[in-house]
Image (tube, rainbow, N blue to C red; front, side, top):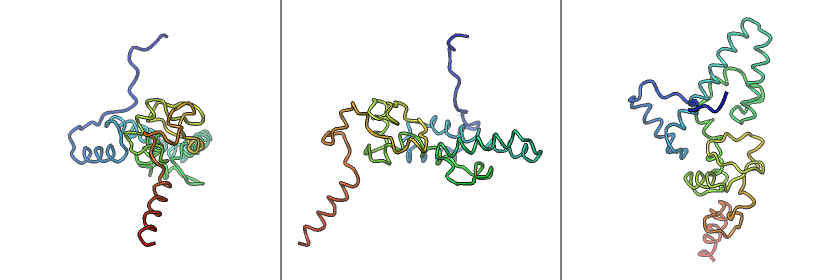
Amino acid sequence: MGDPKKPRKKFDKPSHPWIIERIQEENELVKNYGLKNKREVWKAESMLRSWRRQARDLQARIRRKEAQAEVEMKNLFGKLQNLGVLTMDNPTLDDVLALDIEKILSRRLETLVYTKGLASSYRQARQLIVHGHISVNGHKVTVPSYLVKKSEEPTIQYLPKSPLNDPMHPCRPKLREEKDQKKEVKEVEPNA
């Protein structure tokens, strides 16, 4: 079949591009999650849209008592729980329909690197990932939009060969615990 000339888009653009409420909402998401552009929001919305479409289809098929629909429903729940998007023990299709875009954006590697304290800002997190300083499960990952599985989340760290492994590296952010300890020391000293 050969190499395709143009890869397919993984998102759909908004049908009405100049709706002010949607623009403000997208700008807020870009700012809150440190995204590069609105295309990343559209990709997350497309993923969410496909999961919701699948859930609605499964609801109709379960009402008709199809056996295959039960299997597909369990697979969908397993996939979403594995990604950490669904956190309930016994989810329902209504839980899938109630998902919002922030659940997806919070599972991105860029967001998790920042929340774990490996970077001091979302921009720095993105830069560290793109430059190959971050590893997930022992493998270098250079895609900031990589959706981290729940089982992989504790394995996010600096790449062993990265110069950022040195705690004294000037670009390495100080861990929040170290900052809290320094604040406590400063608060105790003036009173003594």
